[in-house]
Length: 417
Image (cartoon, rainbow, N blue to C red; front, side):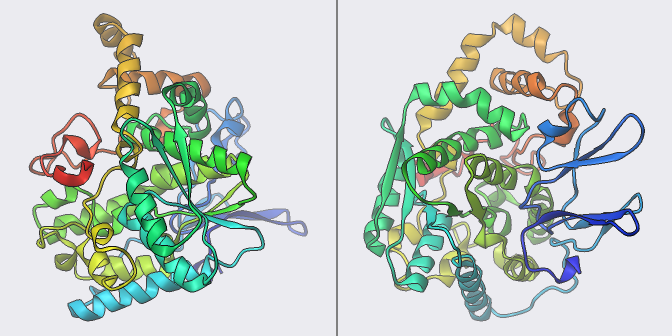
C-alpha cells in the first residue's frame, strides 16, 4: 500500500482488534517522524524530536521510504535507486522534465485554503511560480525576504513577479530579527548543521510574517531541485558516475537537511509546505536520466532544467541566472552577522576547549560551536540524529573547504550579483 501512495506522509496505523500497528514515512521524508525506545523497551514515535527528549535514551529520525512492523524496519521504496538508466535523447529528456514538473506543480495547487509561494528569484522557486501562474490563471501571491543592506534575492524576485504580473510581497528583516530568533530556530529544527540553520533563518522569518499578516495557509517551495540537478560544488564532480552517486546520497539524506528545514520553518507557523520538485514521478525520472547529461559540461549548472523551460516561462536573465545560496542571497550580511556574533561569543581558547568536548561531529568553527551548544541545550546527547555536516564533497577538486557556503568556491563568480 505504501509503495502505491503518491503522497507526502508520516503515519501510524493502529489495529484495535489485534493490538498491532504499522508506522511509515513517505519516500523522501517530506513529512517528519522520529522514534526511540523507552527504558522498558517499547518503541515510541513523534513528529518532532523534542517530544521524545527525556523519554528515550536515543532519538532517531524514522527512515524515509520505510515502514515499521513487528519490530523491524522494511524498505518499500528507495527513491534514489535507479534500476535502468534512461537513454532518452536530450530533446526528449527536456520535454519530459518540463511536462512532469508542470504536473507536479499543478497537482499541488489544489487546496481548500489560500495558497502562497516562497520566491527567492532563483531558478527553482521562480519556475514554481511561473508554472503556477499559467496553471491557475488567477492572481498569484509570492513572498520574498531580504535584509536591506545587500539582499540579492529581492531584486530578482521582483523581476519575476513583474514578469508574471502577480501581487508580490517583500519581507525585510533586520540584524536584531536574526539574532533574536537564532536559538528558537535551532530548537525547532533539532539540528546543529550549519547550512540548515543559516538557510532556515530567512525561511522561518518569512513564514512568521506570512502567518501574522496574511490568510495564506499553504506554501509552495523550490526545495529538492539542487539535489537532482546539481549544486555549485557538483560542477567539480570528477565524472558522471561521481555526480550520480553524490546526487543519490543527497536525495537519501534530504530529510535530515533541506526537507527538515522547509517542513519545520513552515509547519511551526501552522502552514502547510508543498514541494513540487519532490513529486515522486519527477524524482524517479530525473534520477534515471543518463548522469552524463546532468554533469555540468555546458558552462552552466542545472542545464537540463533551464533548457526544459526555454520560451516564455521566465525572463532570460532569471532562467540562466547563476545560482546563489538562499542564506547568502537573503543578504550576505546575514551570514556574516552570525559569524561575527559567534566570534564575539568565544575567545580562541574557549573555542578550543569547548569544541574539544565533542567527539561526534566536532565543531570546527566558532559558528558551528555556537549552533552545537544551542542544540545540546534542547537535545542533550542526541547529536547522532544528524549524521554529518552538509558540506561539499571534500574528496573532489576545489571542494576541500571549511565553510558550506558556495561563496567560498572558486566557481561562485556571478552568483552573488
